[in-house]
Image 1 (cartoon, rainbow, N blue to C red):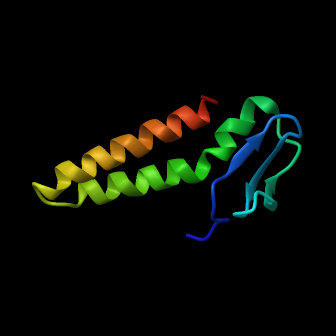
Image 2: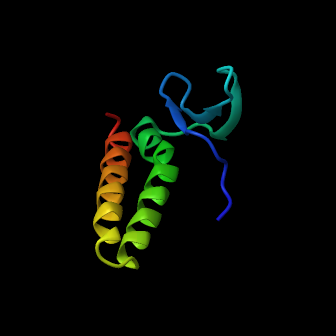
Length: 87
């Protein structure tokens, strides 16, 4: 799946979701004019996608490797949920 890579960040002051380059400059504007209630959820989209991929990897792995993958998937899920909730 192709999507804009990088850490998506919510800017509540301008109602945009964007990414930055290594120098802190805006690299991509992902979305504009977002209702503030939705901005954190949208900015967490790539994190949620990566968490789902981690759960898929866990589900297809064999024991004992799957136990390590379960922890990774769980951590990614918790981080994505926190970001979606604006925490």
